[in-house]
Length: 157
Image: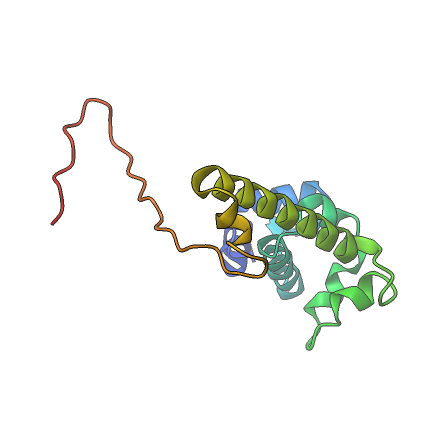
């Protein structure tokens, strides 16, 4: 399979495929007599795994650190990521690091949301009127993007 066909079969672009090769996520493919890349079904399956992992929040650098084991995830059924990555419960390895990063981001966004709610609605929006109470309901503010020179949007009934 040529690069365009392999990229289409994996749901990416030829440019992305070259990047994955350059970063070491894919081994160098075979070449045709004319020097063009020639991909096998196993490489396309690996490309699909890479795309799925990137879509799950892993970075290219995350995947580089375990590129020598990515082929394991093309098996049917694939092994558990944690099992291929590190001993269970160790919290180390690519999966453990990515989970820790996601947890930190969730904490940051939760604090940001609480701060915004407090600024907009006061302490009861975050903590409620009494301990354990739900915050008061609020209406989301619709955001519209208009050109500064565009006339105002008509009022809706």
